[in-house]
Length: 303
Image 1 (cartoon, rainbow, N blue to C red):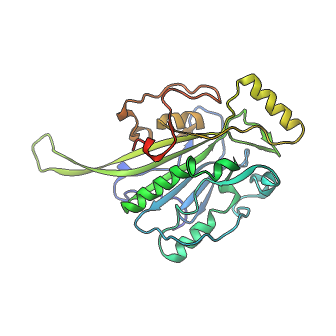
Image 2 (cartoon, rainbow, N blue to C red):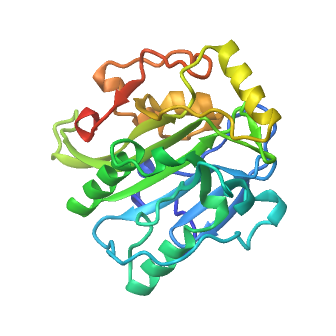
Image 3 (spheres, helix red, strand yellow):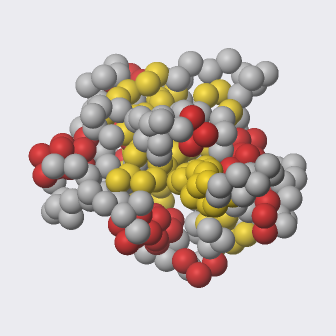
């Protein structure tokens, strides 16, 4: 199978179909180029040269624990000038952070899994992230490991959407706006039993569930300090300031708002409203709403 499958959670049940996000209506006009790979797709923003959205299907019952193979390369499906390629990462503190993780699409036959893992090493699936964050198992990667372990332990199917928050005020470094925030939404199906009002037989129903997260690498500076520090760095060709990473579980509506995307059925499937968290307006970069729950370890997650 090539590309993201919107019907992956239930081909015969439209209630759990999850299409890829699209630009929110009423927002700035955005053209996103779809690039399909084994078990995942990338929606590339050619103007920003980074992915606005990625979508991957994860079959926890058919994962293949294969060794790492593959190397970073330009995506043959997009022109070179539309990709943030190797020059962005040369001799600085930036890492090429996978948006679709290597292990997530690695399911099916051994050949299928190997091809899917190697396909994740295209620059359209990379995002510039500060190195000390990208290698940390306590923050974003720890969260991703937790999601994958859940799917594998329960032999469950998941779909995961991940992307960059492509803000208009992102600092431009080597011709590429460096995102300060990233987002992720994981979705799965959940079965429950219901008793019809007419007293008929008990029936099983399947509902969609979703959980959303934001990673923030904005320096903890006030607006004046941040602007000054960024200007000084860019004036001499240095990397703009990036802060220590903080990971938050957030209402799905917050992801839609900060990323400027229509997430289809995912906001209505959010697990957080049941926990009493109410969405609110998103404040400027560097500050977070009260509804964003900081995550330091898997035990902080509400799933």
